[in-house]
Length: 416
Image (tube, rainbow, N blue to C red; front, side):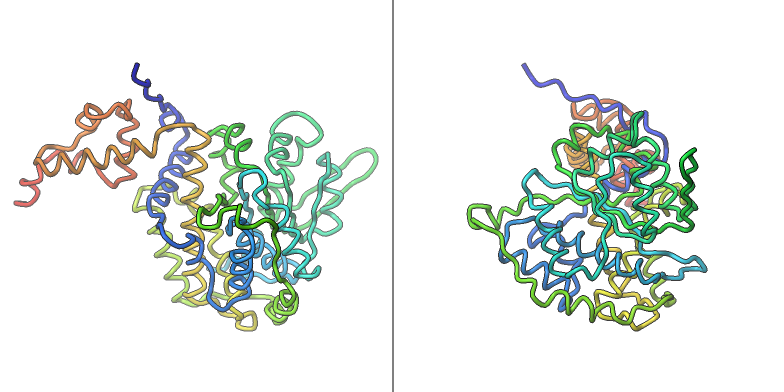
């Protein structure tokens, strides 16, 4: 008996902003390139980041997205500790971005974080709270309200804050810290108040429990959209059998990191060329789709934070002006993360959406080659992977196809 195609009611029932996020993420995923490690275009040549990546590449089989994300957050932690920020269009932007790294169990997440932390020799203070309650976490955060927080088993924490219990209030505190808003907690025993909190958050979690336990709706809600998702999958070119043990030489990392961050400025500003690159990236990553600007700005806002981090990684901490190159590096990282978000979404929804997109693209090409009109009805009739007009329209938007213009046969378009 033929396998019944999976129904995909997800994209028809999601709110408009969630559909927009999914649409843009799938477009970015389709831009992924094959060949060398996909993250290499995000690594400035000659930088300490490159040295760290090459060390992990040569001496471990750990997915390189893990040291990439870890190092980026350590630089962000240094910026936050110094109070450095970038001024963009009059807004002061801190380097307080949030990331979730998903890797298979045993993928080296904890080992990497410990080795990089040890290699940097405590240059950047890290909050590694494992607090079992929101109140306890807030007390820890109050002691260092400008922090880099690294948390392992992050999915377990997410489950805890999404249900009634001692961690339930933590979600609200995190949202307030994301907005740099004052956090207050008053009880009969004590009172805690944190003004202008700044938190860079790096969460590590095992891939399978996350994708099996996280609903697509939760993944696309406002809280989850504040994270950059990073998939860290095994590299077939570096099989684990070739690495009976892991070892990295971090001898000069601390010295180089201190030199790299020695001249951090209190304020950085963007050049007109840098702002133009940001606008170009904004349009490119939106896929030319009609999106709610306030929502998409939330996704893109990390670009300013990444540009500031890249400015420092490139050895330009003493230069108070961010350049177009800084934003160019940032846009590459944003594109990679949007592609990963699409893949994580597909894993969580357990759908055949990517195969449906590929099938629709092939059908559309055949219809156009035959001079036939491209309509949702025509596409649905030729594949069982697309089960409704709403789903077909969603896929059309990803592919940049509109029924109104596509209905005309190709020969008519050519003559027009």
